[in-house]
Image (tube, rainbow, N blue to C red):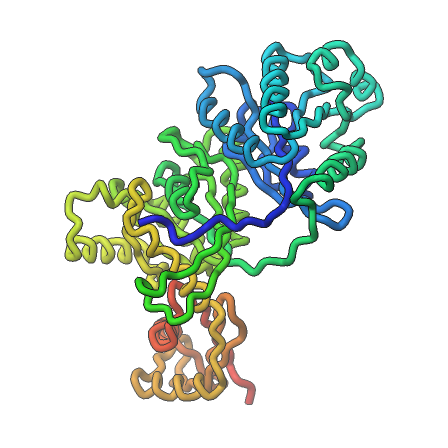
Length: 470
């Protein structure tokens, strides 16, 4: 089944940054969008999948696309895929910024790229703006009139420094002037309410394939090469439930931001600065998310690394949906076997006993559409606020069902009440009699009862214990 989502169209003009490796496109992207979204290093091929961000200039917004650096070398890993991502960005762009390094020499491949861009500009009627980056010093910026740059046939480049911001204001003013002449012009966008969903897991469990299937577009590069995804890549989609399938009386559109992250593995197995930096950004994506899709490979056993990652999600109090991917490879697809696998997963992840398990195949789309209503349900559960009356009735029934067990101390404990301190995630405070204490297992019992009675779906419940004053 096709994805029930469509990519959110902000109806903003778009600029794309294009050029060879190591000319500073990602640094420029971060400077223009005022973020640290793009991973930056001096290692060729750092950026693979294109990054997309929203920039604000003179009170109005436009889209910016950062593309992977082109090496023009077929022997470079994923070069064909990076070229394909660049071509997609060029098609989406209204204005293209061709970026070169003013401190270095112009390579023969850049002359070829300049010719292709000029031809593309003529056929597609899109403006090419020539930008020379790394103009950190006056002596660097003076090279703008050098013959080798003029030979590119794009005129005198606008010199900027993505590091210190030199010339950036002039560039943005020039870009803004051109964008304001388009049919779709920069405009102030409204703040969009959205559910942030991070897709996490070990390398090669199919996160990017799942991401592409969820958004309905091949936006992320998919490869069997470990750590193909080096930095988080996100896409905002609109999801409207199918009333016939999901029994929804009133279909309401929900905005969901899906974030594809770099594979996370043990520190001892991490190789190189790029992977370490990518994992760091994955952790940032987890912290910023509302819900996490923890992706497992159906064809591989659950490892210590999976369990450690699950433990981290519980510590962060994230709502979690466990996705068992590559289910098309399972030899047995009967309900009995599926339930057995669920029980095994819960045994391996006792700290995620609140997380539902969904079996999918990102390759052929099997049951991927079922993830969407679960995301909405999980998000709504994080917002549940119980009234004082509901909590009073709940704790009375819970005590009748199971008397509190004693913790440290000799006095038999007495639970005097229960209050909710906050939502997103839900935090509750158990009020106990002075000079008594309850065992932690009783707090777990109340947590399970709350989850069951009030349907805190896919959501961890944080329980605190306070002793009442005399």
